[in-house]
Amino acid sequence: QVQLVESGGGLVQAGGSLRLSCAASGLTFSSYGMGWFRQAPGKEREFVAAISWSDGNTYYVNSVKGRFTISRDNAKKMIYLQMNSLKPEDTAVYYCAADLFGRHGATRPAYDYWGQGTQVTVSS
Image 1 (cartoon, one colour):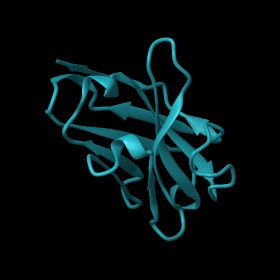
Image 2 (cartoon, one colour):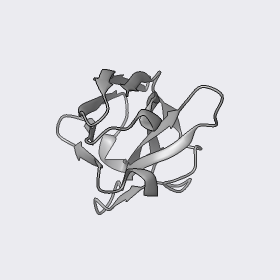
Image 3 (cartoon, helix red, strand yellow):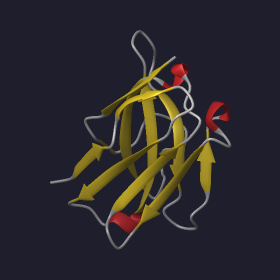
């Protein structure tokens, strides 16, 4: 049974920082590309960041480049999203996702497994 469990969400003021974590279990973690997606009320789920299973390459949506950093720790089966300089428009539920060999492509919301999400709220 595969499980992805997010943590680290919360309420912060604009300009602040949060670090999200995702703990994976029940899968061969090193064989999965990992990603973060987010969904705001009334909007479609959108790609935020991803990290390759093979070479560690990272990918980001333009709106978070320079502010967010995705990383992974294969020994701990964890991924992280460091979010700095947060803006109110970053407010959303953030989801961790796993995609075997990155087979669906990094930026599409078609990954194999998904967590339940963690709420991030940025106030102005």
